Image: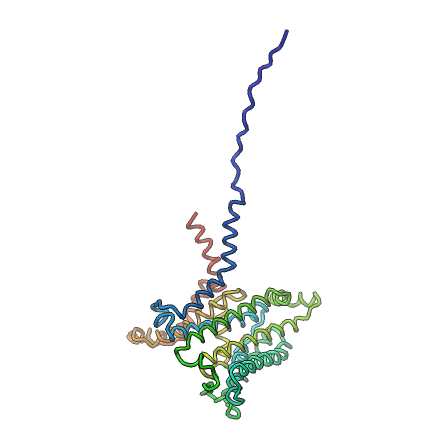
Length: 375
């Protein structure tokens, strides 16, 4: 007897749904990474062509972005953005609270001016004297200041800054010009840097200074020395336990930051056409401190944002304080609002209160809110 075995044809396997392959998101991630990598170059490209712009930005600038007055203000914003970045190399990268950073800025400014006035050096040679003088001064004063740490270091740098400001104002030998300052000799300046028609050239120099400062700070902070700076900021004692000497690394940070500030002094001299004692005052360093905190200490772009915003506000709020709109207010409002420092202080307190960590943290705070809105 035979047995017939019946069999059903096999059921074809149905593939189970699987999550989308990560490869599908790879092009998008690659595009985002490329955008993050190249957007600074795109931004600087846009800034470089602003002198050719005719767009008006009411409330922000008095005239078109390419007008001499607007370019002058924008150039000052770029310079102080670079100065704030150089100061953050000390405060945000190394953890050094210095009140003497303006002294190196003033050294580059005055040494360059005096080299042209007294020694009749051309601009290029005088600029080397100014930058070199700022570098040497930062090393000498840093070697003394770093013998103490913490608040003692801050107080020693403040004492040096005050001494430098008094020296400039007392006008020893008639070389600094006292409270009036001294104008740069126009006969030793290139013709391409004199006159309002050449304001775009000064703007490009200021932009180049900002790019140089950002590049140097980023490169040094990413180097092995920069990693030691980060260790000193977090725990200096631990760096000593590892067998490293924090003193030498902190002195290098002071020298780099002071040299960059000296370069800024040279650019500032070209923009303003002279050297004034306000550049050497401790108020300038305090302004740099506010810029860094306002933008975000220890971040790549925060000090730039803080420096640009603070400098712009210092000029524009001064115009607002003297405007007829403020003059027509009742006395209880007119008196405080007619003081630019009051307006700046209110702006600073508002940003610090609403944005702890500075403007650089704005994107990270906006991301969760944007995610909740799109969910």
